Length: 610
Image 1 (cartoon, rainbow, N blue to C red):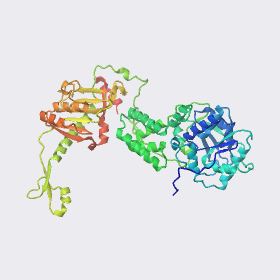
Image 2 (cartoon, rainbow, N blue to C red):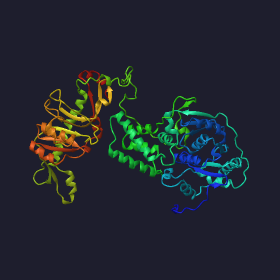
Image 3 (cartoon, rainbow, N blue to C red):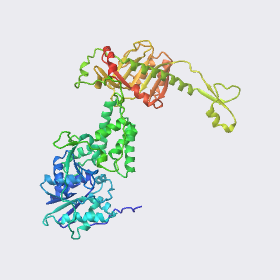
Image 4 (cartoon, rainbow, N blue to C red):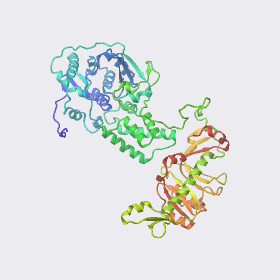
């Protein structure tokens, strides 16, 4: 196990050697891209020597000129017909940034990497570059060099080829050498002695510069596209004060994914899921020995904490890069990550969106209808009347009956008495209590006290709406003797149109009460102004309209104690059911509400609702 690094690190000497200033970087990391740009802008060298293959300089010129559009340089290895090399040229890569900044300042660029076949394998396990927000670049480099990497003969030859190229640069020029951090010390040692010209290629045939399709950028870039877009937007800001913060960028990706997730599924991410996401991504980063999680880890966390749909939205939003276009003067291609990188990881996302199933279908089965022009369905709203969708009414009525039974069973459990068996088995043997007291050699029996009365009203609270998201409040009456009167608050349904005159909302909470056609507008009734929020108003109305003894209240937390006294005055009893005891899958299904703008929409609703 390595020893702890002393705060006073050993002095490895300045990286300025005569006319050469060495600037080691971690390839593909935006923190070093920012650092190298600031160095070039500040020192204004005569020549920038970059660790790029000499045979690709012309292709890099073409690719860099297209930035901020990302390019891929492609060429085939002559040693094998089955192998090819893809080199992404992206704005947050320090080598591409050095090339780009030098060209903007009319500084000469020299590619110094000898193209002598396969590069030697060098360890590339660097400390997380996010640490540059807390320590200086010099300290980061010294900490890395404290434990020298093992060298091979191939490494020495490669460093010698770079040194030969550097020694051939104009002896009067001030040179900034941009080289990989893991190759710094071999190059410094090679520069201490004269080098012979290496045996390497001077040109390659068949080099192509390609335009990658925007949809594949998240797989092939070293930094995910949204992060690179933020880097590009902040690129010309002065100093390092506005350098992109990875953690803030990740938070922005999660927020954008939440909005698109809610728009596509009608569901939203709860506050406890956000906290879990933060802890999970932190733990994934620690497992990878990083300070900040990667895009792959973000997607894994999103799928694990929420679901596959949310993970897909995270991946899509992190992959957005507005600068990239499908139309280009270069060939546009879709490239997979496996073609560019080795040791890639796969993640299967199974989206369950409200659309037709992707399976074999009978011939002639038409897909769901869509708007021909944006706003077409909203234009059919007239506001004369609203109604519900009957199939949904049947589902929610069935669930209301289930909650009534569950409420009575909970109350029955509370009034169950367990006692040792004497003369009667009462309502049966209590196996749990008997086993627990097996050492006594006694049998315990249960005595269920019969519950007198029925449940009259059911209130279900999904969200207390502290943020004011559920502003749509209405009361509608049952259309027959088996359909409850209902009062509810929800998101505004006509903000999310799913058909002509058909809106889709999400319940914050609702009240159901039988018999039907008795309920006045709960939200305008002055008798309930005592309530402090929407759930309390529904509970007061439920107590008022219930003709039975019991009222079931389902929520994340029980009502205030004062409501027990109010219920007693009505001659009612509140049965509290924690919402966590209910199936989250079923709750998701019944939480969606469709509001139809007129009874005529019921004829066509089945073609649009899911």
